[in-house]
Image 1 (cartoon, rainbow, N blue to C red):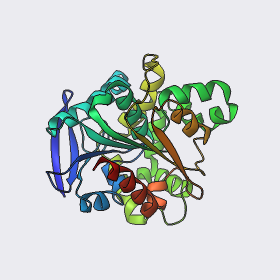
Image 2: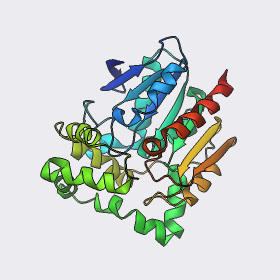
Image 3: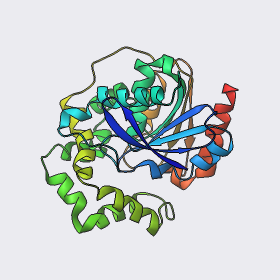
Length: 284
């Protein structure tokens, strides 16, 4: 694996690269509160299958740049980062795979830049128009999203997340997933990433920007072929979000993992990897 510093959209992102340089480009976008390491169980299978895999620490995360101010984390900036990565790789298009917030970004890239997306794969991450619709009519989802509203408070959320050097936060993530999904060494790697200067504040800024600077309303469809993988036991996101996101697609399907939680790529990596590789084989 190579560790790159890639310039995109006026900033520099750390990108972990694996697989042959001549292979089709696959960009894996992590969510909150992970970093590129969140794909540790996926990239070996993709690389072995001949894909060129790029795993960025998205802006504000890990060792990537952390611009100051909430405005720097608007969706327009997050999507421009991904398009810039495709350019930096010297490619016309890429397969975009996203989990959680990475999925939200992936949806928006596919809606606004379909010509740059060869295929779209999303794991437990709703398209933002679907999220807005469900929040308006579902008190259950509103309650499950309580933390997103709590993160709007100044300075306090990052202070709480970082207390005890992130140990309590790490334990909360471990408790949210199935037993064995995260090892002690995995959580240590996350704590190291969160300890980077301004990391926790920048990570929380994604949530603040989502409410302060919501994307422009759009009726754009998702035209690239799309696969949604969804852990049905997600404590934070209702399955209806997957269905509402699918409704935006011209050519998509959902596969539910009935025993998986929000952390499906950690809990059932073989199933996730197999589904992604089967889906991508249609490119050949």
